[in-house]
Image (cartoon, rainbow, N blue to C red; front, side, top):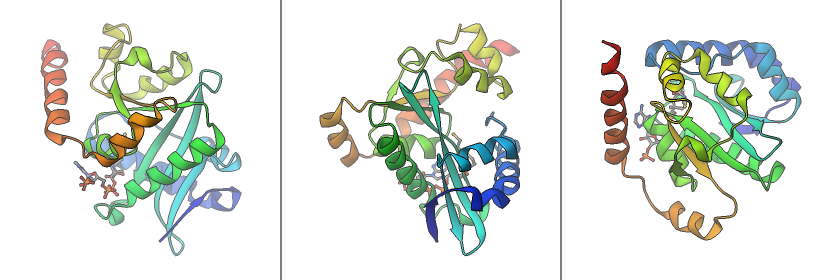
Length: 207
Ligand SMILES: CC(C)(COP(=O)(O)OP(=O)(O)OC[C@H]1O[C@@H](n2cnc3c(N)ncnc32)[C@H](O)[C@@H]1OP(=O)(O)O)[C@@H](O)C(=O)NCCC(=O)NCCS
């Protein structure tokens, strides 16, 4: 398995990347921002993506998005092909895209929003901390990405202050804390509980 910074030579993988993201969104029943092959091409051209390949078979992908005049970057679109899940591949891809983000945008805060426990665990081990949405970018283009999520009404109702996703942030200025958190393992139960509290708060109001 090789995990490399993607480029134009990987254009042929754009359709399978988009299809795998779309299929996984259906299975999860939650919103994963939909992406087109053209959008993926831009990421490859700019050297802002990482691809995992098993020989010439697609195994996984993740890309960098830049927000708020380079003050924030997000490592988005993480996807591992179902044939390669549960083997630590997402962790390796996220580490690679995290390192690339730090090299290319050393002063940017790195953030993400997710409902997925796997991603929360990985982010936490990379030194991200859970934060309220007010700590994240206020770039409207980022939040527009939530429009394809089925929970978008919640984000609208709360005036973008909270939703089912948890915001997580890596602040390059907090280096000492980062070193400590790298050694810690996330308390998965606490995140699951937070998620279920949010679901009971927000989702029952729909009935
Ligand atoms: C989420 C996803 C990327 C995980 O890929 P993966 O290669 O199987 O993950 P890893 O093997 O690297 O696992 C990393 C950690 O998450 C945990 N994990 C993996 N899948 C999990 C799941 N479905 N639920 C809870 N924890 C999970 C692993 O046990 C591991 O934790 P550990 O370090 O405590 O052992 C993959 O399932 C996927 O592509 N899903 C669909 C797309 C998606 O949800 N993307 C994230 C959008 S925010």
